[in-house]
Amino acid sequence: MFSLSRVLKTKEIRNSMLFILGMLVLFRVAAHIPVPGVDPDALVSLFQGNQFFGLLNIFSGGTLENFSVVALGLAPYITSSIIFQLLAMIIPKFEEMQKEEQGRQKINQWSRLATVPLALLQGYGLVLLFEQQSGTTLFEAGSAGMLVTLLIMGSMTAGTIFLMWIGELISEKNMGNGISILIMAGIIAGLPGFLGNSIALYDGSQLITAILFVVLVILTLVGVVVMHEAQRNIPVQYARQMRGSRLAGAVGSNLPLRLNMAGVIPIIFAISIILFPSVIAQFFLNARTPAFRIAAEWVLQVFQNQLFYGLAYFGLVFAFTFFYTSVIFHPDRVAENLQKQGGFIPGIRPGKPTAEYIGWVTNRILLAGAFFLSAIAILPLVAQQMTGNASLVIGGTSVLIVVNVVIETMKQLEAQMAMREYEM
Image 1: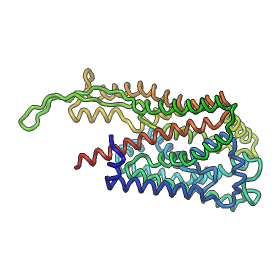
Image 2: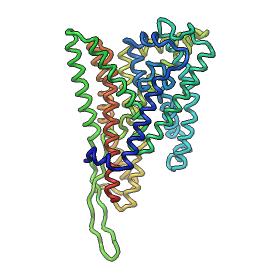
Image 3: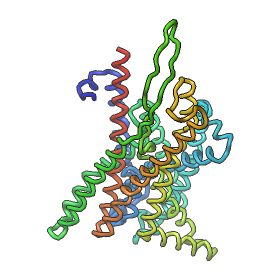
C-alpha cells in the first residue's frame, strides 16, 4: 500500500494528479455555462421531484439541471462506443481490427466521428423532451424556434466533443478511465446540493426513510467493495525449462479471475440504453401518422412504469456485464499465452481445452457477479417504492458509480507507484 506523502513526492504522479484536477475544474466551469435562450427558473421547477430527469442529470454529470453547453454529458460517445463494440461481435472484419493496435485506433476514431451525429440527434431530442415534460416553456422567447434549436444542438454537440477530449486526456495519465472519472466528478459536485435539499425537507415523520437511506448507502458500499475485490484463483503450473546449462524446476502460480471484470461500465451502458427510447419517443409525439404517435405515447407510458423500469434496468446491467467482459477478456488468448510460456492448468490439456475451461469458469463466476451488480443497481429502486422517496434512486446509483471509480483509480495509482519503485 502507498501513502499520500509518497505519492506527492513522486514528480510524474503528482503532475498527473494536478493535470486531472485541472481538467475536472475545467469540466465544472463548463457545466455552469448555459446554452442561449433558456429560462433558468423554468428549469428549477422542472427538476423538482422529477425522478426521470434526476437520473438523467446524474448520468450527464450534473450538467443537465443548468442546461449547460455540456448538458448531454458523454452519453453520445458511450452510445457510439456500444454500437461499434456490438459491430465487432457481429462483423468479422471489426473483430480482426480489434486484435491489432492500429485497428483499435481506427475503431476509436470512427467512434469519435459517430459521436457528432448522435449528439445532434440527442440534443434535438432533449429540446423536445423538455418542451413536452415542462408545464411552462423553458425558453425565454416562449418556444424553441428553428434558430434557437440549431444553436442549442450545436452548443451541446461541441460540449460533448469537449468532454470526450478531456476524458481521453485523463485516460492517458493512467490514473483510471477518464469517462468514469468525469461522471464521478459530476456526482460529487452535486452531493452538497443533494444533502442540503434533503436536510431542508427533513421532518420527524421521515426518520424511517432517513435510516433506510443510510442503511442503503452502507449496503451498497460494502457490496461494491466486496464484489470488486472478490476473485477466483485458477492454479497454473509451469513446466521445467532449460536456462543456460541449468534445469529450472517447475513453478506453481495462480490465474486470478475477478468476480466483476467489467467494473462500473455495465451501469453506465445500462443507463445510456434505458434512457434512449424515451428520448427518441419525443420525436414522434406530434407525428402526423397516428401509428407513430400512439407508439411514442406507449413507449413513454411503459418506461414510466416503475416495475418495468426496474426489470429492464436489472436485465440490462446483467446482460452488459457479460457483454463487456466478453469484449475485454478472451479465454483463447489467455490459453495461448499460457502455452507459449510453458504453463498449464493441472488436469487440463493445453490449447483449446484450456480456453474452454477458463471460459466455463469465467461464465460461472460472472453469473454471480452480474446478479450481484444488478441487484445492487436496483436496490435503491426497491427502497424508493417502499418509502416514496425518489432521491434514494439517485443516491444509490451515485454511490455505486463513485465507489467503483475510486477503487479502480486507487489500484491504478498503486500500480504506478509499484512500477516506479521497481525502476528505482
